[in-house]
Image (tube, rainbow, N blue to C red; front, side, top):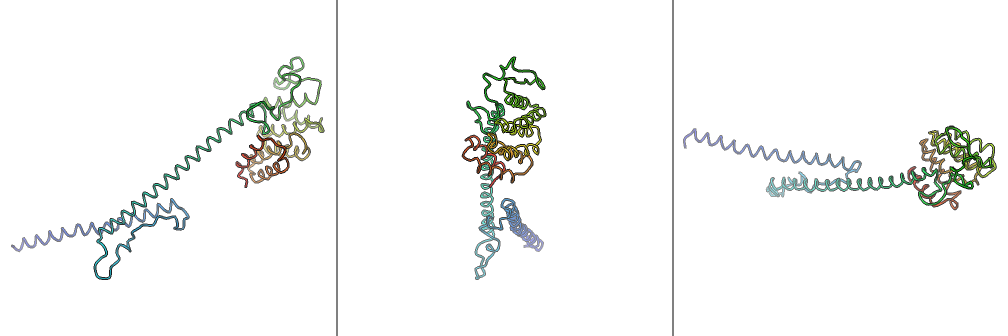
Length: 304
């Protein structure tokens, strides 16, 4: 072979061997980088896991480069790299399954919460529509807890026994001043004329402190404050009803609404104490509907 051909062949041989050698030397670096990225992803998926939740690779670079002691590699570099890539693929598949399962659980929890919220909103809307409270069921024939008792006929039929009051709300006139005073305060509250309702209900408690309707009026006074966006005043009204008239018919309701007022004031720990007091003192006297409301309120306040 001529000298220049020998030189050309040598150059081509060197060039041909250099390309695959360079490519092969680059593959381990790429695999190492992929493994580092995988570990970074694992740390994001398992924060604070201290390594115990990480998916460890089945083939590590140190294992792939071990020598048998006889001067011959245990396996070829290509086989080692293939094993490492396979291990990375398995890790990626496992992590993908973990993420998908977590997303599925979150979707299920979200659906359950939305269903619970919808049912609760409907129940509260039904209670508010009747002017009732926690002692009355969402549906059924029971009388709402703060609605006035029958006065010998529907309240709307008072006719000549009623006169125009504040904001067009009729004043009943049945011959029982105590009952008429409370019913008028109730009507003002139902009409969302809160300042007028508060003044009227205060007057009922002041004029008739030792009567049955005093407990009703004091509790409804607190509810009027609460609906009027005055949780501090509401909490005082509810607490006074419980402390001053613990045997009153609306004392248990006042304790429940006291917890609601405290939640408005961002005091869930105090609200939990109030719910505990309510269950301890009136546990055998409260209705099934009230017990359900207490359970839901404790869950909202994250009581232990």
